[in-house]
Image (cartoon, rainbow, N blue to C red):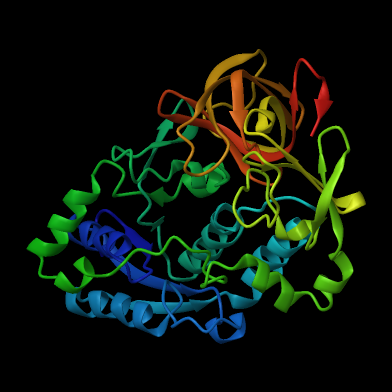
Length: 372
């Protein structure tokens, strides 16, 4: 039995989680590998070749790493709970006129809980993943902070992991850069990992066509929502569209309409099946409401606080003042921010530390005082 303890490592078969397992093994932990089967590829309806974390190849790649290093590997089938929660939520959010973020939801509500339950059954002290982020204990709280590789940082996706879960979480890649991870794989002879492409698609939408996914999943959806109106912010009708669920705030391409200026989706009004179009400037908002808060670094905020706030995964962040009111955060940006999409996650930072996050419910312009 290792003096450092037993750790259950989530292994997708990719280079990051594989190297995370290797590192912990070399550091003296008793490692058990676990690959989670979240999605049945054949049910996606896509013609694209099976790839990604749920493919047979990826499962075999993870198992081969474990066999080579002499630690056990298991497959955890969570397709039912994943589908019931993540995929249903994804569908429901688009039908509500919002833009979901299933990867954040999966991390916070499915993967961590599933890993911890299995960790308990296997007598594991810790769980570990290959995320590029860091976790530490400070003043009795567990704090997520950015990974040192700014291009790979994944702290945005972890704001919803509970304090209890973080207390048992190891993130061995947080202090390393991707180039160092690749070099570690090369030095240890895992050259096959170097040639694996990284997937940025949603695992259950492998062709990246969420419209097609919704049409296949919701019977008669096209007929129900077809013929809605494209309107301008003043209510002027300028055309018809395919249905409000097939558009997202900030979208420019694929609108199928010419207005004489670059048009963007600035709002979706589900009740009227309307998609509001406007200029890039009209897409800008300087405030938003964020609900279903989960705070990490602090248990609560009693005063307004200066932060850097991200409104999407690849957002570099914007200066903002946040004010907590119960389970809602009021966010005021110093300058306008484009494409604040209801349904996306907002994450608040103090330096490199994650204060917490939540789900964007609506946005507004302070001068207009009209919520979107």
